[in-house]
Length: 153
Image 1 (cartoon, helix red, strand yellow):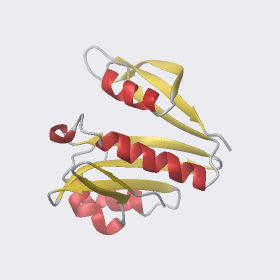
Image 2 (cartoon, rainbow, N blue to C red):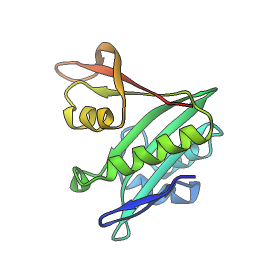
Image 3 (cartoon, rainbow, N blue to C red):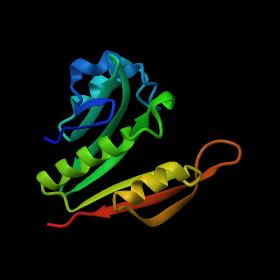
Image 4 (tube, rainbow, N blue to C red):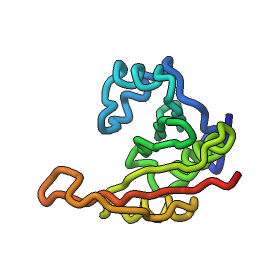
């Protein structure tokens, strides 16, 4: 399992069901309660990582494995910790483990307006492979950009 650290961030580590209470404080869309986190982390196909700074969770990545592919469902960094390398650490751990488990590709989607995230993903080798028009709710509705990272064997 990949673990990493950089700068003031302690080691990134796999998230466990016992982390559910602290992860709920991240207010990740779709995972806002300890029960939701626990259910996600107990899934057989779940892969998840977290890090904490000063005893508080700073971010998390949640993915699922299907056959030889990994789909990132959430990469969330607390607003106060953004643009400090946390997303890079979480994503690097996920990509390393994807290789270790024999995944051939990693997929995700991101709001078209989230240029910071798109830039982060591009830095890690993701390329745009499609678009879902008007996918995200809101006024106006927003497109989702589909990104894929092909892993070398």
